[in-house]
Amino acid sequence: MIPRRFTLLLGLLLALPVPQSLPAATLGQDVPLGLEEAWQKNPQDLQLGLTLLQYYRKQQDNTRALALARQLYATYPNNPQVLKVLIVSLLANGDANTALNHANKLTELQSSSPDAWYLLGLVYAQKSDSAPAQKALDRAVALQPDNLPALELKTRLYLREQRYKEALESARSIQTRFPTKPLGYQVEGDIYTQQREFAKAVPAFQAAFSKAPDAALALALANAQWRADNPAEAIKTLKSWLATNPKDINARTQLLMYLNSLQRNAEAIAEGETILKQEPDNGIAVNNLAALYQQVGDKRALEFAERAMQLAPQSPDVADTLGWILVQSNQQLPRGLELLRQALAQKADPLIRYHLAAAYAKTGQREEALRELDKLQQLNKLSSNKLPPQLLADMQKLQDSLQQK
Image (tube, rainbow, N blue to C red; front, side):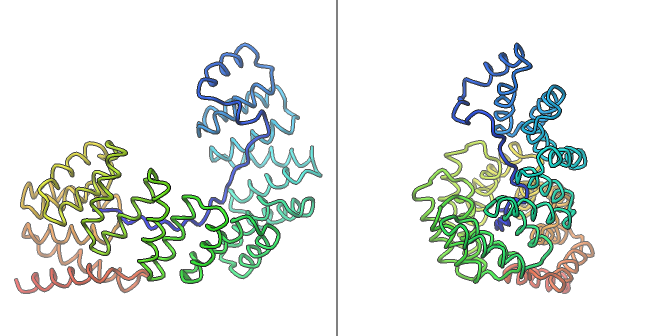
Protein backbone atom coordinates (compact mmCIF):
# COMPACT_ATOMS: atom_id res chain seq x y z
CA MET A 1 0.00 0.00 0.00
CA ILE A 2 1.15 3.55 -0.67
CA PRO A 3 1.24 5.26 2.77
CA ARG A 4 -0.93 8.39 3.03
CA ARG A 5 1.41 10.93 4.59
CA PHE A 6 -0.53 14.18 4.52
CA THR A 7 1.89 16.29 6.49
CA LEU A 8 0.18 18.55 9.04
CA LEU A 9 3.36 20.22 10.21
CA LEU A 10 2.02 21.55 13.49
CA GLY A 11 5.56 22.74 14.22
CA LEU A 12 8.28 21.56 16.53
CA LEU A 13 7.25 22.40 20.06
CA LEU A 14 10.74 21.85 21.36
CA ALA A 15 12.97 23.89 19.04
CA LEU A 16 16.16 23.40 20.97
CA PRO A 17 18.52 26.41 20.97
CA VAL A 18 22.08 26.11 19.71
CA PRO A 19 24.76 26.74 22.35
CA GLN A 20 26.78 29.90 21.81
CA SER A 21 30.19 28.30 21.39
CA LEU A 22 32.49 28.74 18.40
CA PRO A 23 30.88 29.61 15.05
CA ALA A 24 29.33 26.70 13.20
CA ALA A 25 31.45 27.65 10.19
CA THR A 26 34.48 26.21 11.96
CA LEU A 27 32.99 22.73 11.74
CA GLY A 28 34.09 21.13 8.49
CA GLN A 29 33.76 17.48 7.52
CA ASP A 30 37.40 16.80 8.40
CA VAL A 31 37.22 18.56 11.77
CA PRO A 32 35.44 16.01 14.04
CA LEU A 33 38.32 13.54 14.33
CA GLY A 34 40.75 16.35 15.05
CA LEU A 35 38.33 17.86 17.54
CA GLU A 36 37.92 14.60 19.42
CA GLU A 37 41.67 14.05 19.54
CA ALA A 38 42.25 17.62 20.70
CA TRP A 39 39.56 17.25 23.37
CA GLN A 40 41.08 14.02 24.68
CA LYS A 41 44.39 15.85 25.08
CA ASN A 42 42.80 19.00 26.57
CA PRO A 43 39.70 17.95 28.56
CA GLN A 44 39.80 21.23 30.52
CA ASP A 45 39.41 23.38 27.41
CA LEU A 46 35.86 24.69 27.70
CA GLN A 47 35.59 26.23 24.25
CA LEU A 48 36.96 23.10 22.64
CA GLY A 49 34.47 20.95 24.51
CA LEU A 50 31.55 23.21 23.56
CA THR A 51 32.58 23.16 19.91
CA LEU A 52 32.74 19.36 19.89
CA LEU A 53 29.37 19.20 21.62
CA GLN A 54 27.94 21.53 19.00
CA TYR A 55 29.15 19.15 16.33
CA TYR A 56 27.47 16.17 18.04
CA ARG A 57 24.21 18.12 18.16
CA LYS A 58 24.45 19.05 14.48
CA GLN A 59 24.83 15.32 13.76
CA GLN A 60 21.88 14.56 16.07
CA ASP A 61 24.15 12.32 18.11
CA ASN A 62 22.23 13.00 21.31
CA THR A 63 23.86 10.24 23.35
CA ARG A 64 27.41 11.52 22.83
CA ALA A 65 26.29 15.11 23.23
CA LEU A 66 24.79 14.34 26.64
CA ALA A 67 27.86 12.40 27.78
CA LEU A 68 30.08 15.33 26.85
CA ALA A 69 27.72 17.86 28.44
CA ARG A 70 27.84 15.90 31.69
CA GLN A 71 31.62 15.79 31.50
CA LEU A 72 31.76 19.55 31.04
CA TYR A 73 29.32 20.06 33.91
CA ALA A 74 31.49 17.98 36.25
CA THR A 75 34.34 20.41 35.58
CA TYR A 76 32.29 23.63 35.30
CA PRO A 77 29.18 23.13 37.50
CA ASN A 78 28.36 26.85 37.77
CA ASN A 79 29.08 27.91 34.22
CA PRO A 80 25.83 29.18 32.64
CA GLN A 81 26.92 28.20 29.14
CA VAL A 82 27.61 24.64 30.27
CA LEU A 83 24.27 24.51 32.09
CA LYS A 84 22.48 25.58 28.92
CA VAL A 85 24.00 22.87 26.76
CA LEU A 86 23.41 20.30 29.50
CA ILE A 87 19.72 21.25 29.71
CA VAL A 88 19.35 21.07 25.94
CA SER A 89 21.12 17.70 25.81
CA LEU A 90 18.96 16.28 28.59
CA LEU A 91 15.80 17.39 26.80
CA ALA A 92 17.02 15.88 23.54
CA ASN A 93 17.41 12.58 25.40
CA GLY A 94 13.96 12.83 27.00
CA ASP A 95 15.13 13.49 30.56
CA ALA A 96 13.02 16.52 31.46
CA ASN A 97 13.07 15.79 35.20
CA THR A 98 16.83 16.12 35.50
CA ALA A 99 16.77 19.05 33.08
CA LEU A 100 14.34 20.84 35.40
CA ASN A 101 16.81 20.79 38.29
CA HIS A 102 19.50 22.35 36.13
CA ALA A 103 17.09 24.88 34.59
CA ASN A 104 16.10 26.09 38.04
CA LYS A 105 19.78 26.41 38.93
CA LEU A 106 20.37 28.41 35.76
CA THR A 107 17.62 30.91 36.59
CA GLU A 108 19.17 31.33 40.04
CA LEU A 109 22.56 32.05 38.50
CA GLN A 110 21.12 34.30 35.77
CA SER A 111 17.82 35.67 37.02
CA SER A 112 17.91 38.52 34.49
CA SER A 113 18.64 36.29 31.47
CA PRO A 114 15.69 35.78 29.12
CA ASP A 115 17.42 32.67 27.73
CA ALA A 116 17.49 31.10 31.18
CA TRP A 117 13.75 31.62 31.65
CA TYR A 118 13.06 30.41 28.13
CA LEU A 119 14.91 27.18 28.84
CA LEU A 120 12.94 26.73 32.06
CA GLY A 121 9.74 27.20 30.07
CA LEU A 122 10.99 24.70 27.49
CA VAL A 123 11.62 22.11 30.19
CA TYR A 124 8.15 22.56 31.68
CA ALA A 125 6.67 22.33 28.18
CA GLN A 126 8.35 18.97 27.65
CA LYS A 127 6.95 17.86 30.98
CA SER A 128 3.48 18.95 29.74
CA ASP A 129 3.25 21.30 32.71
CA SER A 130 1.76 24.30 30.95
CA ALA A 131 1.07 26.72 33.80
CA PRO A 132 4.68 27.01 35.05
CA ALA A 133 5.87 26.89 31.43
CA GLN A 134 3.79 29.94 30.54
CA LYS A 135 4.92 31.70 33.72
CA ALA A 136 8.59 31.17 32.85
CA LEU A 137 8.01 32.29 29.28
CA ASP A 138 6.19 35.41 30.48
CA ARG A 139 9.29 36.21 32.51
CA ALA A 140 11.49 35.75 29.44
CA VAL A 141 9.28 38.06 27.38
CA ALA A 142 9.16 40.65 30.18
CA LEU A 143 12.96 40.73 30.13
CA GLN A 144 13.11 40.75 26.32
CA PRO A 145 9.82 41.63 24.61
CA ASP A 146 11.04 40.50 21.19
CA ASN A 147 12.28 37.08 22.35
CA LEU A 148 10.99 35.12 19.37
CA PRO A 149 11.63 31.58 20.71
CA ALA A 150 9.68 32.40 23.87
CA LEU A 151 6.84 34.00 21.92
CA GLU A 152 6.62 30.99 19.63
CA LEU A 153 6.64 28.49 22.46
CA LYS A 154 3.91 30.42 24.29
CA THR A 155 1.79 30.26 21.14
CA ARG A 156 2.39 26.56 20.59
CA LEU A 157 1.48 25.82 24.20
CA TYR A 158 -1.86 27.56 23.63
CA LEU A 159 -2.28 25.43 20.51
CA ARG A 160 -1.44 22.23 22.35
CA GLU A 161 -4.09 23.07 24.94
CA GLN A 162 -6.60 23.88 22.16
CA ARG A 163 -6.85 27.46 23.40
CA TYR A 164 -7.30 28.62 19.85
CA LYS A 165 -8.34 32.20 20.56
CA GLU A 166 -5.22 32.91 22.62
CA ALA A 167 -3.06 31.03 20.13
CA LEU A 168 -4.36 33.09 17.22
CA GLU A 169 -3.94 36.36 19.11
CA SER A 170 -0.37 35.37 19.95
CA ALA A 171 0.42 34.34 16.37
CA ARG A 172 -0.85 37.66 15.05
CA SER A 173 1.16 39.50 17.66
CA ILE A 174 4.25 37.74 16.29
CA GLN A 175 3.24 38.84 12.78
CA THR A 176 3.02 42.46 13.98
CA ARG A 177 6.35 42.36 15.80
CA PHE A 178 8.17 40.44 13.06
CA PRO A 179 6.42 41.38 9.80
CA THR A 180 9.25 40.13 7.57
CA LYS A 181 9.52 36.71 9.22
CA PRO A 182 7.36 33.72 8.22
CA LEU A 183 6.90 32.32 11.72
CA GLY A 184 3.75 34.18 12.78
CA TYR A 185 1.96 33.24 9.57
CA GLN A 186 3.19 29.64 9.74
CA VAL A 187 1.85 29.28 13.28
CA GLU A 188 -1.48 30.78 12.18
CA GLY A 189 -1.62 28.13 9.47
CA ASP A 190 -0.85 25.46 12.04
CA ILE A 191 -3.66 26.74 14.27
CA TYR A 192 -6.24 26.55 11.48
CA THR A 193 -4.90 23.18 10.36
CA GLN A 194 -5.37 21.72 13.82
CA GLN A 195 -8.94 23.00 13.80
CA ARG A 196 -9.44 21.46 10.34
CA GLU A 197 -10.18 24.90 8.88
CA PHE A 198 -8.00 24.25 5.88
CA ALA A 199 -9.39 27.04 3.69
CA LYS A 200 -8.25 29.55 6.33
CA ALA A 201 -4.87 27.81 6.70
CA VAL A 202 -4.07 28.27 3.00
CA PRO A 203 -3.57 32.07 2.96
CA ALA A 204 -1.59 31.90 6.20
CA PHE A 205 0.83 29.35 4.77
CA GLN A 206 0.98 31.29 1.50
CA ALA A 207 2.02 34.41 3.40
CA ALA A 208 4.69 32.47 5.30
CA PHE A 209 5.96 30.81 2.14
CA SER A 210 6.19 34.11 0.29
CA LYS A 211 8.46 35.52 3.00
CA ALA A 212 10.87 32.59 3.23
CA PRO A 213 10.16 29.58 0.99
CA ASP A 214 11.34 26.29 2.42
CA ALA A 215 10.52 22.60 2.19
CA ALA A 216 8.38 22.43 5.32
CA LEU A 217 6.23 25.36 4.24
CA ALA A 218 5.84 23.96 0.72
CA LEU A 219 4.49 20.72 2.21
CA ALA A 220 2.26 22.54 4.70
CA LEU A 221 0.79 24.79 2.01
CA ALA A 222 0.15 21.91 -0.38
CA ASN A 223 -1.43 19.89 2.41
CA ALA A 224 -3.77 22.73 3.33
CA GLN A 225 -4.72 23.26 -0.33
CA TRP A 226 -5.38 19.56 -0.81
CA ARG A 227 -7.51 19.26 2.30
CA ALA A 228 -9.39 22.42 1.35
CA ASP A 229 -10.55 20.51 -1.76
CA ASN A 230 -8.23 22.32 -4.13
CA PRO A 231 -6.07 19.52 -5.52
CA ALA A 232 -5.00 21.48 -8.59
CA GLU A 233 -3.38 24.17 -6.44
CA ALA A 234 -1.75 21.56 -4.16
CA ILE A 235 -0.16 19.87 -7.16
CA LYS A 236 0.87 23.24 -8.62
CA THR A 237 2.56 24.20 -5.33
CA LEU A 238 4.58 20.99 -5.18
CA LYS A 239 5.54 21.04 -8.85
CA SER A 240 6.67 24.65 -8.55
CA TRP A 241 8.77 23.81 -5.49
CA LEU A 242 10.28 20.74 -7.15
CA ALA A 243 11.20 22.75 -10.24
CA THR A 244 13.85 24.53 -8.15
CA ASN A 245 14.37 21.78 -5.54
CA PRO A 246 14.33 18.56 -7.59
CA LYS A 247 16.01 16.45 -4.88
CA ASP A 248 13.33 17.08 -2.24
CA ILE A 249 12.19 13.48 -1.75
CA ASN A 250 9.45 14.36 0.75
CA ALA A 251 7.81 16.86 -1.59
CA ARG A 252 8.03 14.47 -4.53
CA THR A 253 6.55 11.64 -2.44
CA GLN A 254 3.65 13.85 -1.38
CA LEU A 255 3.10 14.82 -5.02
CA LEU A 256 3.06 11.13 -5.93
CA MET A 257 0.37 10.50 -3.29
CA TYR A 258 -1.81 13.27 -4.62
CA LEU A 259 -1.47 12.10 -8.23
CA ASN A 260 -2.26 8.54 -7.18
CA SER A 261 -5.36 9.69 -5.27
CA LEU A 262 -6.53 11.40 -8.46
CA GLN A 263 -5.84 8.18 -10.40
CA ARG A 264 -3.24 9.97 -12.50
CA ASN A 265 -1.13 6.86 -12.20
CA ALA A 266 1.18 7.42 -15.14
CA GLU A 267 2.29 10.73 -13.64
CA ALA A 268 2.57 9.17 -10.18
CA ILE A 269 4.74 6.38 -11.57
CA ALA A 270 7.01 8.95 -13.24
CA GLU A 271 7.49 10.68 -9.88
CA GLY A 272 8.16 7.35 -8.17
CA GLU A 273 10.77 6.40 -10.75
CA THR A 274 12.45 9.78 -10.31
CA ILE A 275 12.66 9.18 -6.56
CA LEU A 276 14.12 5.73 -7.13
CA LYS A 277 16.84 7.14 -9.40
CA GLN A 278 17.84 9.47 -6.58
CA GLU A 279 17.60 6.85 -3.83
CA PRO A 280 17.83 3.33 -5.30
CA ASP A 281 17.74 1.66 -1.88
CA ASN A 282 14.78 3.60 -0.51
CA GLY A 283 12.44 0.79 0.52
CA ILE A 284 9.37 3.02 0.77
CA ALA A 285 10.01 4.41 -2.72
CA VAL A 286 10.32 0.87 -4.10
CA ASN A 287 7.12 -0.05 -2.27
CA ASN A 288 5.24 2.92 -3.69
CA LEU A 289 6.24 1.88 -7.20
CA ALA A 290 5.19 -1.71 -6.53
CA ALA A 291 1.72 -0.52 -5.50
CA LEU A 292 1.45 1.76 -8.52
CA TYR A 293 2.61 -0.98 -10.89
CA GLN A 294 -0.04 -3.27 -9.40
CA GLN A 295 -2.75 -0.68 -10.01
CA VAL A 296 -1.88 -0.39 -13.71
CA GLY A 297 -1.28 -4.12 -14.24
CA ASP A 298 2.49 -3.83 -14.67
CA LYS A 299 4.11 -7.25 -14.19
CA ARG A 300 6.98 -5.66 -12.26
CA ALA A 301 4.71 -5.16 -9.25
CA LEU A 302 5.58 -8.42 -7.46
CA GLU A 303 9.30 -8.05 -8.17
CA PHE A 304 9.31 -4.55 -6.70
CA ALA A 305 7.21 -5.60 -3.70
CA GLU A 306 9.64 -8.42 -2.87
CA ARG A 307 12.54 -5.99 -3.22
CA ALA A 308 10.80 -3.52 -0.91
CA MET A 309 10.36 -6.27 1.67
CA GLN A 310 14.11 -6.91 1.58
CA LEU A 311 14.85 -3.20 2.02
CA ALA A 312 12.21 -2.42 4.66
CA PRO A 313 11.13 -5.70 6.29
CA GLN A 314 9.58 -3.99 9.33
CA SER A 315 7.33 -1.61 7.40
CA PRO A 316 3.59 -2.36 7.64
CA ASP A 317 3.02 -0.53 4.34
CA VAL A 318 5.50 -2.83 2.61
CA ALA A 319 3.89 -5.90 4.17
CA ASP A 320 0.49 -4.67 3.02
CA THR A 321 1.66 -4.08 -0.55
CA LEU A 322 3.30 -7.47 -0.91
CA GLY A 323 0.44 -9.28 0.83
CA TRP A 324 -2.17 -7.59 -1.33
CA ILE A 325 -0.30 -8.34 -4.55
CA LEU A 326 0.01 -12.01 -3.57
CA VAL A 327 -3.70 -12.21 -2.74
CA GLN A 328 -4.84 -10.44 -5.89
CA SER A 329 -2.66 -12.60 -8.09
CA ASN A 330 -3.69 -15.84 -6.30
CA GLN A 331 -0.04 -16.55 -5.53
CA GLN A 332 1.00 -17.84 -2.11
CA LEU A 333 -2.36 -17.00 -0.56
CA PRO A 334 -1.41 -18.18 2.96
CA ARG A 335 1.70 -15.98 2.89
CA GLY A 336 -0.28 -13.04 1.57
CA LEU A 337 -2.90 -13.43 4.29
CA GLU A 338 -0.24 -13.60 7.01
CA LEU A 339 1.52 -10.50 5.69
CA LEU A 340 -1.75 -8.58 5.79
CA ARG A 341 -2.41 -9.73 9.35
CA GLN A 342 1.06 -8.54 10.33
CA ALA A 343 0.56 -5.21 8.59
CA LEU A 344 -2.75 -4.55 10.36
CA ALA A 345 -1.25 -5.51 13.73
CA GLN A 346 1.40 -2.84 13.21
CA LYS A 347 -0.79 -0.16 11.66
CA ALA A 348 -4.55 0.16 12.07
CA ASP A 349 -5.12 1.56 8.58
CA PRO A 350 -8.61 1.20 7.01
CA LEU A 351 -7.21 0.21 3.63
CA ILE A 352 -5.08 -2.55 5.19
CA ARG A 353 -8.16 -3.82 7.03
CA TYR A 354 -10.10 -3.91 3.76
CA HIS A 355 -7.27 -5.82 2.10
CA LEU A 356 -7.36 -8.32 4.97
CA ALA A 357 -11.14 -8.69 4.64
CA ALA A 358 -10.78 -9.35 0.93
CA ALA A 359 -8.03 -11.88 1.63
CA TYR A 360 -10.26 -13.70 4.12
CA ALA A 361 -13.01 -13.78 1.50
CA LYS A 362 -10.70 -15.17 -1.15
CA THR A 363 -9.51 -17.93 1.18
CA GLY A 364 -13.07 -18.93 2.08
CA GLN A 365 -13.09 -17.41 5.58
CA ARG A 366 -16.45 -15.67 5.22
CA GLU A 367 -17.11 -14.84 8.89
CA GLU A 368 -13.65 -13.35 9.37
CA ALA A 369 -14.13 -11.21 6.26
CA LEU A 370 -17.52 -9.94 7.47
CA ARG A 371 -16.04 -9.18 10.88
CA GLU A 372 -13.35 -6.94 9.37
CA LEU A 373 -15.90 -5.20 7.15
CA ASP A 374 -18.09 -4.54 10.18
CA LYS A 375 -15.13 -2.92 11.95
CA LEU A 376 -14.64 -0.67 8.96
CA GLN A 377 -18.31 0.33 8.95
CA GLN A 378 -18.14 1.17 12.64
CA LEU A 379 -14.99 3.20 12.04
CA ASN A 380 -16.72 5.13 9.28
CA LYS A 381 -19.58 6.00 11.63
CA LEU A 382 -17.36 7.18 14.46
CA SER A 383 -14.42 8.78 12.69
CA SER A 384 -14.26 12.50 11.96
CA ASN A 385 -12.36 11.45 8.85
CA LYS A 386 -14.88 9.57 6.76
CA LEU A 387 -13.51 6.73 4.68
CA PRO A 388 -12.76 7.57 1.02
CA PRO A 389 -15.66 7.01 -1.39
CA GLN A 390 -13.73 4.43 -3.44
CA LEU A 391 -12.93 2.41 -0.33
CA LEU A 392 -16.58 2.53 0.76
CA ALA A 393 -17.65 1.33 -2.70
CA ASP A 394 -15.15 -1.54 -2.60
CA MET A 395 -16.34 -2.50 0.89
CA GLN A 396 -19.97 -2.56 -0.22
CA LYS A 397 -19.16 -4.67 -3.26
CA LEU A 398 -17.27 -7.19 -1.13
CA GLN A 399 -20.04 -7.29 1.48
CA ASP A 400 -22.68 -7.90 -1.21
CA SER A 401 -20.69 -10.78 -2.64
CA LEU A 402 -20.26 -12.36 0.79
CA GLN A 403 -23.93 -12.07 1.66
CA GLN A 404 -24.88 -13.87 -1.54
CA LYS A 405 -22.95 -16.94 -0.47
